[in-house]
Image 1 (spheres, rainbow, N blue to C red):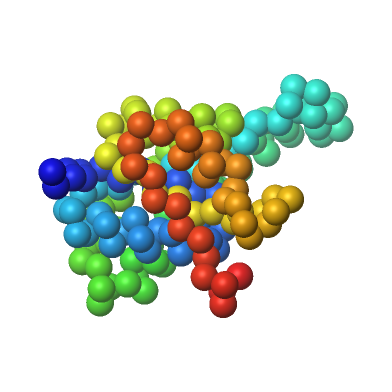
Image 2 (tube, rainbow, N blue to C red; image 1 turned 90 degrees about the vertical axis):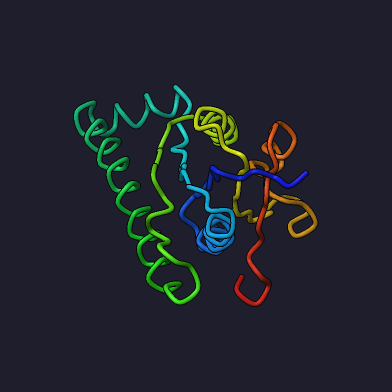
Length: 165
């Protein structure tokens, strides 16, 4: 059976590795004539930590900072997609047209990525990984590991090549 990939969910944390993983997502989208949804999760602070920050900054300033961060993240994602597409013009046709949705949910990254994949009816998840933990290079990162474990659809996890780390 040939896979029918019409929607790719690309998960990003805006790191250099995530940018590298985007090249795989864009190439797959072109090959399968698929659309892409980009998701970048804003991790929420623990209630205790958020309360401390609110008390230090004041509720109004904290709310401004949070909403500003959301807009900043959306703009950064759009800029990175645009820059990447410009750099890949010779290799990927209409790269920026493949991305039809950018989502920035708040929550636990692996849960929000899996929820987004289900909500957009994604056929595949593409993401980068750092793999930083106690065993460093021998294991993939915690978010990627949880997504691979719990995902009902294929997950492509991309590491940054050693010469670029």
